[in-house]
Length: 480
Length: 124
Image (tube, rainbow over the protein chains, first blue to last red):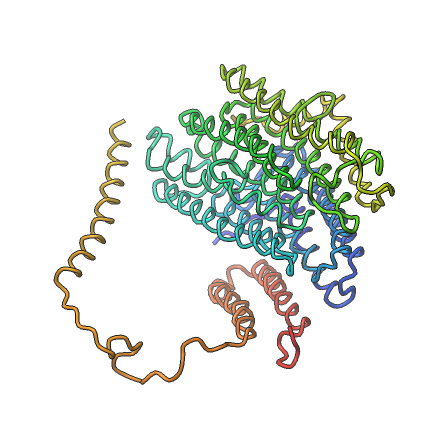
């Protein structure tokens, strides 16, 4: 029996993170016992180490463990985005945990790291089994994180809804995978494509892809599998909400792109109408339902549904340029969404304050820095210049026009205008309404730091987008 | 074109027969089964022990954690047996892999141990 040849360097980031997460549990148990800030620093350092092992791999194209672990720019791009998101969420978590006196601190950070490992595997594998394992590792970790407010009934409701609906989505996806395996006898995506090459567009396999597509649509929070999103986002602890709105979404889009463009190259073009319907429905339902929301976390939840819609436009177009746009969009979306959630956290940090939009009233007088940066994030989320939000939308819609889907791009633009209404409402609250108190808002340094990092990134990418565009074009090569 | 249409048709026929079978069986049972209800019919064990007390007894939550801990060792054996069979072929590589695997499981044991769930007198 030949021994499996393993290239440990290719999965260095995951190995480092796994070891670090286990070590974090042990260190917390035996030495630090809930020393919140130390554990957070440990977690961030582990993520930085993983990122440091990821960056040198750029330029490598290879696979190990019979393609369970693939190294290509696409995987590395997503890994870096996910690592950055996780690191920022950990920084945001420390003060939130301290304020709400959440129990089991060490486990919180360890589970967050485990979720990150799961997402990295999802982005870097072309094997259906590994995609599923990565997805489950991510999902189960996220269920636990969403319910971390053990004494808060809203958090309990969130975790129950998320868990039950997530189970159904996972089961659907697995059922779809079983169809695909049953008809092709393979679990590795390029072999599936080979097995299918002879018999074009098998409908039974298409049914399998449809089932797994439903599972992914749940994970990326797209209509018609979006019902869980507002309740879960509202009930989960705010740093976890920030994490849920970017991490699992990015990873699920990565895995979906691999399944579609490597395993079933003809599927996206044949079933284009499906993606178009999902994209349009997500954009309209997300944006229109965001308007009446009074809770900012719910508003951002509906806005995240709409953003899934914009990204799905890229999947409907299914060209290499569109996928480059998708990668660009996801990277920028991570930055602006985490930035926005950092400010939500900062506003809710004050005793007696909360997650309502009305809590933002008169913020410009009490915390001018937060008000101006929140304005930047709202403008960026609406996709307006001079922020990075513009470029993500621009490249996806440009690809759509190139492929003759100009009306879809037009609908996307219309939705950007609709979204401006509720984003501008937050700005109106901050600048034109009277604050409830005159005292300046005290903001922990960690929140301010994350706001600084994200706002600078959003503005710099807004003015000099070329490096990121170049990176996403390289990473999307071969997709579409 | 014909192959995938036939594929789909066979799936649809399979689904129809499957769901039809269930419906027909339930209908047949309704039609031909004799209905005789008595107290004995409602007992959990018709021939055997007489049931004592209610089924809704409180079971200590700790048993649940013990069951989960058992799972750790369960998984361990599931992988240890096939590993032992090919141990010689896998040689040092297999040994190291298994040590890593068992170490990860050990963290899973150390965690509840240190948290005190193995002690009956500690409140969780």
